[in-house]
Length: 322
Image (cartoon, rainbow, N blue to C red):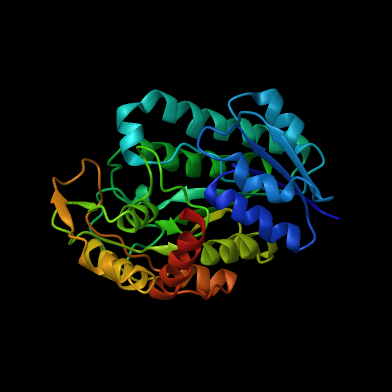
């Protein structure tokens, strides 16, 4: 049985990956410090014979060494997300996202880990205006968070070329779905808006709602991580891939669909007004990924478009937030 380490295992993406790879027969070792993750997300796995959990911080190298011992693969999801959070506190974002990332690379190298797959970010495209976003065309970062995620890619490349550690970076594009936390100052837009609408409160859109995103349902992300672990072609390794649908949805369109799906459960939600506020500092105006590279080298075909993923996510939130 192969051992797979998942950092950030109690988080939104990490807990979904944990569930999937336990079902696939891996021994999963989870690491989380609960800074943004929740114990409730891993409770279903704690009694699983093939799940081992460590509460700890990637900023501590000894912890990283302990967790990766005997592992074949690492799925590194632990990070402090959010552009606004990084603007408010760039030091802590750098400590976790850069120093913590480097600790995990060093520990993985020392333990003889075969492959290190990590959560990269679409924020790396920065001020590049070209659409769709192609992996080898990036601009200047627009936030401290974007800088940290780009530095991750640089470090991963060096560890591949210098130490022979196989690395694959997955540039996530606005991931959403079950278990994504709707609460807190830095909650992602979809779960935050779902909860507000369920409470008959008006969500606030930053700007005029024309900004667009390649919103990506969690099951597409799980698929990409699985493909990254199983890739065998040399040209598919030691590189980065957009992890997205290859489409763009405006914030106005997103809210329209949210209200449509939620009003199936409560018709009055359709009447909740939308409020518009000032544009947010550090936001990229438009984001649409090219997924051609992942299709060619990994055989990726998104299982869910935005509407289908949102419909499933809304159903999950309706059952779990009431």
